[in-house]
Amino acid sequence: VADCFASGCLTGRQVLITAGPTRENIDPVRYLTNHSSGKMGFALAEAAAEAGARVTLVSGPVHLPTPDRVERIDVVSARDMLAACEAAMPCDLLIAAAAVADYRPQAVAPQKLKKDPNNDDGLLLQLVRNPDILATLAQRADRPFSVGFAAETENLLEYALRKLNAKNLDLIVANDVASPGIGFNSEENAVRVIDRAQRETRFAQTSKGRIARQLIAFIADRLDKA
Ligand code: CTP
Ligand code: CA
Image 1 (tube, protein in one colour):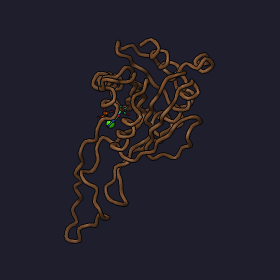
Image 2 (tube, helix red, strand yellow):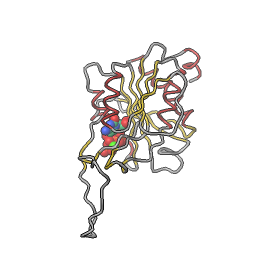
Image 3 (cartoon, helix red, strand yellow):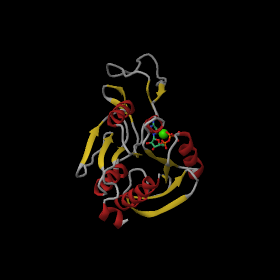
Image 4 (cartoon, protein in one colour):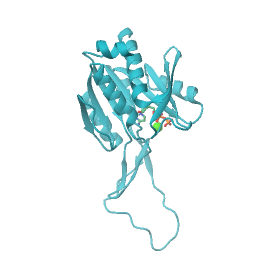
């Protein structure tokens, strides 16, 4: 790992990283989102820049400082994130660490929604599917070396492998978000990386900064061999 950073193992590489949650507006004052803090994606962007890459970081709404020598593009919704990523193509390496909302409200109400004074029923919110940013970019003719994250609460390896195949990825980082102290919105992480040959490499629990450096060194090595 130290070697990768001493030698600049991503020198000359253009790297695109997505991070954070997306926010899907319901009306002018309400939205749907998730608990992603953006820490893992930002740590990866910092590590990639330290490894010599030119890094574009496309981030949903987070409360984090921009790492040194990283070009940051702030977005709100999944569709904004896709457009920003498409504008940042081509690249050599894509790491999709964002927790993209799978659905958005079918329409954003132009005015603040009001309760119906004539009934006490619940509210049905019609949702539609968001585009899959990672799958879209990994299926292009000029596809980068593509790394996804699979945040799962059960059947970790099975679901991760399914995503690797379905999205045409080179590597998937499997993240057990049901374990206490790791994953979503926590300081530390522990992951397993799975490749197309279904070989698994484990990264033991440590700070997201350390995991990010280990992952960048590992990914850079695989990118060189690809
Ligand atoms: N991803 C993406 N765009 C989406 C959904 C997911 O780019 N609209 C990316 C994530 O950044 C991550 C990977 O796809 O790298 C897997 O995301 P995840 O939410 O775990 O999987 P999904 O494919 O959305 O499947 P599900 O949520 O149903 O498990
Ligand atoms: Ca999802």
